Image (cartoon, rainbow, N blue to C red; front, side, top):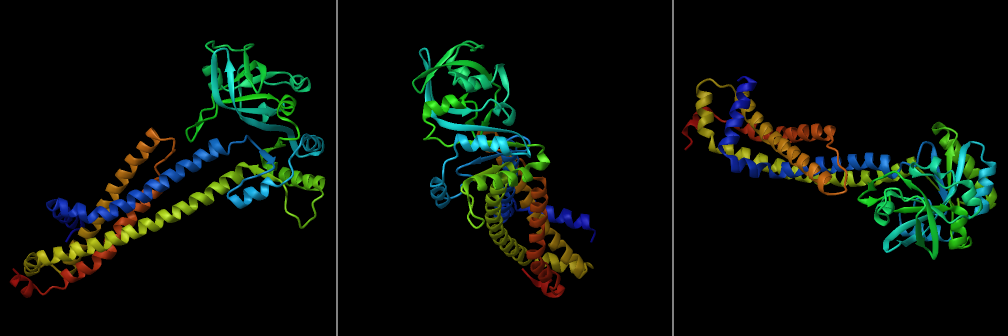
Amino acid sequence: MPFAEACRLALDSILSHKLRSFLTLLGIVIAVLSLVAVVSVIQGMNIYVADRVANLGPGVFVANQYGIVTNVKEWLVAKKRRRIVMEDYLAMRENLRLSRQTGASIFGKMDRVRSGNRSMDEVAIRGVTSNMINIRNEKVAIGRYISEDDDRHRSLVCFIGSDVATELFSSPYPIGKTLVFAGQTFRVIGVSTVQGSVFGQSQDTFIHIPLATALKLYGANKVTLAIFVQASSPLMIEAAQDEFRLLFRARRHLKFNQPDDFGIISADAITGVWTRLTGTIATVAVGVAAVFLLVGGIVVMNIMLASVTDRTREIGVRKALGARRRDILLQFLVEAVVLSASGGFIGVACAAVATRLATAFTPVPASLSIPAVVVAVVVSGAVGLFFGLYPASKAAGLDPITALRAE
């Protein structure tokens, strides 16, 4: 029997029992849907994290008191560490040789900000050095950034995010206008370009003030600094991190067998933690999909066995007319594979719709994974081949005379 003819007969058999075929495929559809959807979301989020969350700038890493904390135990240990203070930053700025520039920042607090009769809650107040605009990926849309003179004189000036400018000022040019927060009045000197959001959280609700002003405002003995280091080139970032770690450990008088009492955060470290997390999620998704595929395969085998029983007389007629054992085997094997692969295609279509809906209506980024689609369809077809082998062998082994007598 030609392969094309076997496929045509298989499709005719599936379409003649639409409800039965759909119920048969349900397990495979769910397996493929869950696998492709999860992999697509993970792939999209990996790209998103690399581009938005871990995007510190070319060759930039951050040293702070906490580092990357993934559990409560690590948080409690990090909380007891010594704070990073202004003297630490100045020492690193003077002694690092593999860095292009070194800056510092402190996170004051989420504060309420007023301008006239307008106010805005939960605005992130950050104290920064004048070179942070070059280290971070922020750009000036209007006005200017904080200068060294602003920092030296502890000026009450601020550089604001685009959301703050939109919310508090009716003018498209708020330079020179004033904001009130933390009991002080600040003059606006610049507005940032729009940075968008990360997982639905706006990145434009911030106010930058000179670092020296922030230390005076919030208390130098109460806050901890984050030191931003830009390596001399992106290729030198690991060497720059090693140099920083060596110098900072020496400054802290740590022995060789003592762990670091500070944390270093880089884009690679963030994406590494994220990849480990998503790897665990993917493993669970594969396990769930495997269970559904096993159940779906068993259902396909049972349905094919029932089909062999229902079509025993047909098999006897075909054999009486000259059909060989391999023709019958091929017919039922192709039917099982087509049936199972159809479930794979339906699952892929459902996953594509789910991916588009997730992207359109949620902050979760998703990108349909073509390798996952190919693997899902191939595996679903392989499930049909494996679980259809026994029913096909049973059909091919029927005695034609006995089969013709079947009612």
